[in-house]
Amino acid sequence: MAELRIPRIMISAPGSGSGKTTIVCGLLKALMNMGLKPAAFKSGPDYIDPMFHSKVIGAKSRNLDLFMLGHETAKYLAAKNSADADIAVFEGAMGFYDGMGKTSEASAYELACCCDVPVILVVNGKGAALSLAAQIKGFKDFRPDSHIVGAVINNVNPMSYHFYKDVIEKETGVKLLGYFPVMEDCNFESRHLGLITAEEIGDLQAIVDRLAVQAAKSVDMLTLLEIARQAEPMQFLPQKVEKIGKVRIAVAYDKAFCFYYQDALDLLTELGAELVPFSPLTDSCLPESCNGLILGGGYPEIYAQQLADNHSMLDEIRTALKNGLPCFAECGGFMYLLERYRDEVDIYRWVGAIEGETVMTKKLTRFGYIHLTAQSDNMLCTKGEQINGHEFHYSDSSNNGSSFVAAKASGKGTWECAHAGANIYAGYPHIHLWGNPVFARNFVARCCEYQQQKSQV
Image 1 (cartoon, rainbow, N blue to C red):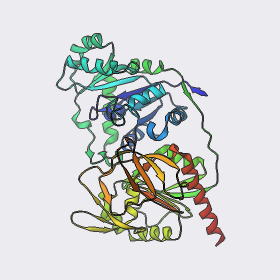
Image 2: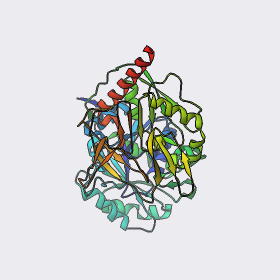
Image 3: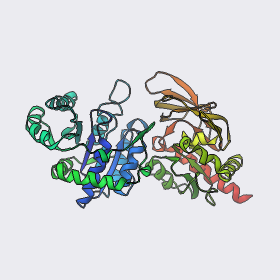
Image 4: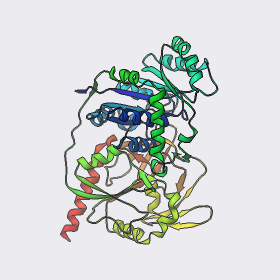
């Protein structure tokens, strides 16, 4: 057992839409303006919020999903990625206690307990007064180990905040650290999978600068730091990763394909992979000398025409996969490998390495956490091996595959999914490779084997 003394704080809220991500971005920038180096984390599987954190701090934010990672791996990754930071800032997902089904399992609350993180609750003050005290007290006392020690009131004017501050603190026993007023020019837009990505907001840095100025003005940053420094040393079990080879792997990374867990990519690097980014939207061909391919999730449907028009890229990927190039494709990446994408008006020809077409639906399809079990030996694992994952998509396809069985974590339903063979994994489920590092080792090993086979030809 090892330990790391790192000041840390979690920003959570009673529910989604409270302004957590906006406030976290402002606080991260304010901390940097104070000369501190923050590390950033997001509870749960969300890909988009960490992109905002990363833009602010200039380093990758990390997902800590207890369902996919388990407690020990989550603590290890939290410690590993905080080692050279001055403070670790965690952002909760959804409502503080919202977990799987009717439980708090895999919730922000459970992560706060797992990593022993003091919690600051963001509460929407619009249209409320003393009722804010009832809400804060209810969340603090709902569990005896809630870790809630402070609160920030959002969308409230200075006069109201200062008028009610003392009575709220008296009624709740929770320190109010400050407020944010309504800042209409600092809102982040949303689309069907949540916020639009950080790359799509042209004036993001200007917005974050305004939020940081407001944080410095109306949030007690020194008390926030004092609370963070009261966190006990983080206990964790170090996990050793041994390099198994040296191989270049192409990773699709642009506006269409941008959903990745940074720790999963880092794991591949630690195993010996050199990850080479490329764009299926704008590049004419795959990177040179690559012996593996990763196509992550994202928004290929938004860029359907541009992807379809890039014929040279489509042809090269189709030929490379036909010739045995190892490929790992999730959700949007899987969609891209199908023959067609169909919207309400047009049909777009995509890679065609897998038969079938994909279309957008009007609701989330097979949404939530899942247990994945392999039905046959494949590139990532042997028959019967398992890994946890999740599905979160509005599209569906005519050929979802049958190489794995997905079982809802709630126990309500199973279905077949994914195409997996000697050189491919392609399916809707998202997985985190730290959830079962054997999958990562097997993928890198297969890329190394492919590289060796090519050199012998």
